Image (cartoon, rainbow, N blue to C red; front, top):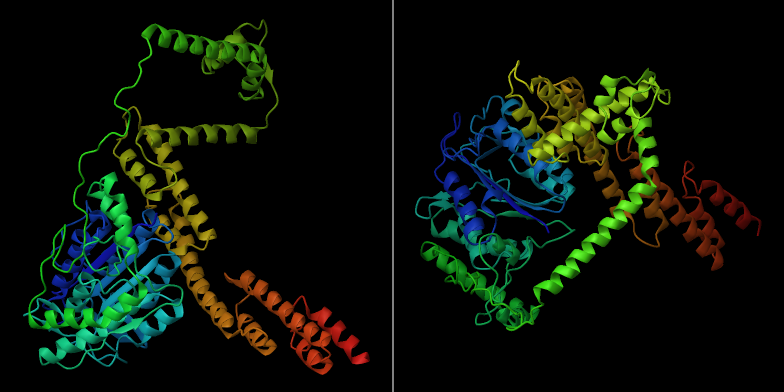
Length: 621
């Protein structure tokens, strides 16, 4: 089941920009709504503001380093493909040399590239993480720097290019406004009201609501017009699954999964399941469409005329149903069950146990010699097994060796195999030590925690040598995990894992070189994937020329970059499509059209020779 995450960043006190009034309140309000009303798990909702408390030993003060480290760490250790992420940023945004940047707390308008967070890089890394992302950006501020172009233009283009759901608080040529009366920015106030009133089940509904309410707020508070910009990806429009609704209330589309409430609340009684099902079934597309405009108008009017109503768990003022704690569990077992006498149970269990033990003993005795041979052959070769060496072997093997009258010479393994066997034993011991700490070898963050624990063992202590050996093995395991992710094109996750390797660890230099390579490959992969998506978009079935144009676009993917193999497969597939169209036209008697179609097959493709043969054949007729 997908997890739901939120990162809310709000910065009031900038070091080099004019302070804002409501950015911090915006971030805190959204986080509070998602936890208290939407059912998000509290530890999955992270806030970064001027005064937000640290998470463990990690600072949440919204500097560039802290923001990027948090994102990379979550990508490496927590996020899974198809998870949902809401990323909210309220603060300053700047466009510098045609690129949009988010400005962290220490952002410098004179050093935008060095101190800002490049939105292109951020959005590409989120796409690589394969998440269902919703970007909410309130970055158009009237007191920003003298930018090269209005901030937001590149972001809109990137969102369309990368197909990321994105909402900007206003159009690039406009500015976002705050209100001390509302206690929020206009955009966030409208967003919260939309979610609380059930007008945020999908991006289309949310866009309609915000486009109506935000300008109303501007008019009511005598501010210049502000129109949110929404980019809806073609792949999906639903933000999150729907909530259950109480049958006594008019159904409204909801966006939060009722499974999320299982973390904090008990499940409803079994007897109520039929009522819940009936409540779900009452909603209809026609009724929701007819009432949509009325709901938006009604909710919008309440937002302008008075502060937003407080909501709480249970039944709120908008008719949203949030399940309360359930009744006590009622057993469905029969009241009176016949009991089996104790002596019968003893005979049954005792007899069964003896039978199983007897079968195990027979199997062991029949294969005892085989077991001994296998264990002897796996011990150190090219050396005589002395009494001292025998003591280090497993008990069953050592007993067998002591029965021999002469030393056993083992010559079955090479020196390379000896080293491999020794390394394997050390790795197995390191994995065993991980399990003792309840940590997983498949999670880079767990391995990093194990390394930190092992470093606490000082030189001279009994387990110091073993701890150092484990550190070397665990750090290599982190690098192996990172390399595996990079092979799967999960570059952001790979980089985040490799960054856990510190300077004191043996693979550090190799990890840093890999990070630099993966950053380059990640950018190339996104760029090439964008090319292939654009090529696919050109294709129109039954039109050979569109396949030809798509092939020309796909050829732009360089041979030494990620995505080249995919491009070549697509090119060959499209050339086959062109040839199939040509053959179909020839079969219909349209020889000239068939020849012209086959001529569109490019020379470098697999179908080229077949196309040329077909052209010669058709020309002879």
